[in-house]
Length: 375
Image (cartoon, rainbow, N blue to C red; front, side):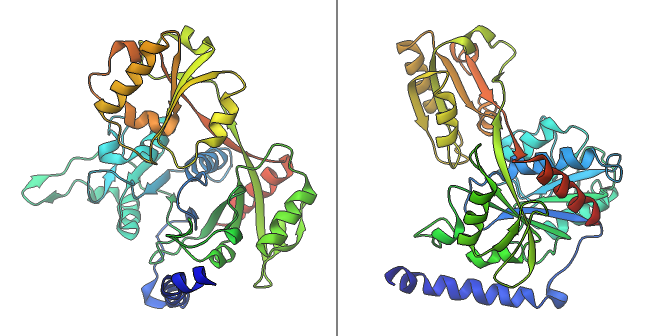
């Protein structure tokens, strides 16, 4: 009861805001091309970037979108640049943000852009000829890119001014929204009921041994009844059928971070792990099967690493000279911004990529059909 009283002003303000935008009208706009929004109602850690990458791979495999000009638009969280910017592999996280840069390096033929104003960003992606117009006494320079045929909006579910054609909301299996609280007492940045407004819910980071009955029980706790594992649909509290899918994380083989990294270090039994992500518990659990942790330095999400941080890691290396040094793929984008990295660290530094996948082939099939029929 005390929590409800303390959070009442925030709850009311969110409810009023959502009601305001739910009415639509001139306050809400749509992009000129189809858009897919991948978002959540939780602060960080639900796996938006791996799911954006998964959706890109799936779209590229379809007959309709395989040869299309796909684009990803993000706000570029914690970047130091402003306004609209096309991301290149050489952009650096200060200009692009770590997640957009990671996506661009994996999908070189996909246009990746950042813009806090998503309406303006979509317009620029649809009309890239406007990018190099003269402005404020200097000529702006952007890499050439084709007009976008479809745009994936990364983390735009709370950007209510732009209405996506397909809204996908991610819910962490280990942090169900119905058991969470609004900020600052919990990690919810929107009302938990907002998940029912989405076209698709994806429950992420599921255990590998998840059975259909367990899925039904999880969704019943969320308020979604009569879940059909074959059709991947259930009835939400609004009495509407809603697609629900379950995904898991797959860790891939560690990748050398530098050209001078010595691949032999990855076979060491000792590991120095450092992370700057919202939740690293699953990664540490996975690595514990193969490594003995001699050091684990956990930094805040999107932490901008400094020389001081790496001096501390270098001290760990000197104490344990046979150890490998490992971080996440997202963190690696920020690490590569650091100049003057000591060779002692370069030679033993790796990152571990991740992919997300559905818990059953049937789910993947239904999801692909949903994607193709949405536009």
